[in-house]
Length: 554
Image (cartoon, rainbow, N blue to C red):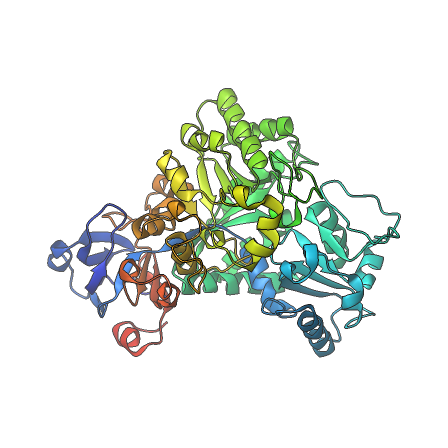
């Protein structure tokens, strides 16, 4: 829809941002906030459309500081294993999909629950029961692990004689044959490269679905936190076709096996994105994986895992190599976006950022450490000192099955209770932004905010919250998903910043049915999104009678 009329929002509660007063009205002209409060009524030009909020809640739209849109959209293109609650159910869904798609050479799906099998280990023979004659690849919910059948192992050339790959792991049976589970990208890419993946059209369609999904949840800016060269063509084609429903920034993957020699190619990709001239597309970040994940014991820890399977986990980069590469990326004017789960990985990431500052001077690129699941108390204050943004996934800060079955047993209770120290990091002067890591977990910001403010599961367990001293107040949590992400996105350096409702800002807004600040944690995720606006224009409109009467449909 392209409807450039001025819009006056009134008749509800308007939250203008953390630490700012609520407003009674907002006037949007030419896609920007033109006036706030009584002046909005007084200065509305002829032809202004009045949007009656019907007692609802208007606020800056959400940003998602760490997600994987193409992966998320592709989950609908294969077997629907996301909701399966048993191995037998997954196998049956794969069988159903394969029977319904006899022409598919490879059956590719995502994402299964890795806690359904002890240790997260899944056997190829289980999938052979469903599809013995065609290769099957299923990604786990963590996207660091895949489960494949025997035919996929055969076509990828993985057998008892295959050496352990660099940056990966092939769990094996006692006789040395591969089990069927592959961990981390050095192993995963052995089968994904053999498969050829999805076509360009399928991936463009997936990206379109994904950005529509984000917009339906009130999100208007997304950090794609894992972009490989082939993905760039998907984004450029989606922009050309006009199917993007949100702004997206690309974090281009830095591979330690070819870095920093590959840096000029990433700089060239940034130039290509800029030359395309899409107002919805930027590429100012570079993604580093410092480690893996705790659940498969590849997250890098200062002290060993309780089970000792992988001792201290896995560093993807040697510390000196990471430091030199982060410095090179920063010098090229790109933003380091570093995945760091374990406390050793976080320390190595902070060391790399500190080294870059010593070489280049204080960075203007706002380096990001994503996840920061476990941070040593000795390193917390370094986030503030080095001006590093901690991008955390608030939905993970709860004692759900993933935490109790896979994470806590590996870390031990004392160390597990130091995870996701959001409040402590803020109290130490650090900067916090939120992301979903969708499709690893829910893309809905209100799901994450409900956990950030309660530290409980959806059923309210434990009473009073897990590690309740790390709970956030609702205004701080809302800010982490709005202005916090805008800071990460360098939005203040554009001619129309977003993340707050202030005069001159881009009118990136979300209209909720009620005020989350006065809503109980158990019902907060149920708050409906009535409309989402990008630069003043509706990209999502509710079909509820109230909203439909207030706004024209596209």
